[in-house]
Image (tube, rainbow, N blue to C red; front, side, top):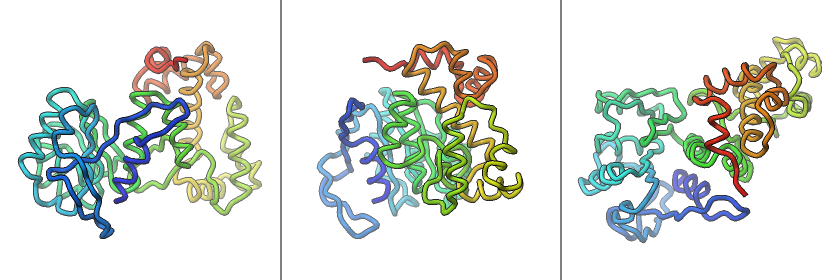
Amino acid sequence: MLAVGIVSEVFGPRGGGLPGFDFALCTERPGPVPTDLGVPLAIAHDLDRLAEADLVIALPWTGFRTPPAPAVLDALSAAHGRGAVVAAHCVGAFALAAAGLLDGRRATTHWRFAELLAGRHPEVRVEPDALYIDEGTVLTGAGAAAGFDLCLHLLRREYGAAVANTIARDMVLPSHRDGGQAQYLAAPVPEGCGDERLAEVLAWAVQNLHEPLPVAELARRALMSKRSFARRFTAATGTTPHAWLRNLRLSSAEELLETTDLPVEEIARRVGYGSAAILRDQFVRRRGVPPRSYRRSFTSTP
């Protein structure tokens, strides 16, 4: 039920100028489908629905240790073969592996079952610490709330950071978090963390992103030593000050690239990088493309 809630929340109906999706749940045999909460879901569509989908996400199911029916595997393979993007959340990766879609690819799943996946499918390069893995037309995500990471990544990849950030804010979630499955949510400003002083300093950092913002300065404003600040920061956000700032700078740069005509040099200044060259280096390293290529791909249109 958690997985169903995640994908329906991200890809369900939404106004406000955001992309609309023709969202549907389907199964091999339509009708009531039991769930882990004991509440059955009434599924109206059969596997024929996959034949026209642009994106197919295999959700986790309690019987994942047994391969899905041949009809399910054939439908997944056929969807991928005609060009659909096929993804899996949590142990849904077992369905993609059984269909042969993960052969020779990197993949992840819930950390608890990563060893089982690797043992059953040695041709799959399982990475148990990843939140999600993007192999182009095949993607896999880790367990539980990492389904949000996977879905938001798909939005960011296809529609850009502005759309992903808007939907993430609507769900009160970070639009992107770095690191592995052991990491807690790295929220832009950790609300409700019980540390008002830390939250105030981070809010100040967001408003002064154009500044260098060394950790020593943040610690001084929080009236803490650098060591105490780093410890309390990690406890509140699940990441380090350096990683938090880097992600914040890059996310801000993405939005400016999408929504403004500012030169890359000015964007670099506004998000706290010393030059366009430094921004480009970080962008290529963390996002895979230079800023100008990103702008050409994701510039918002009226």
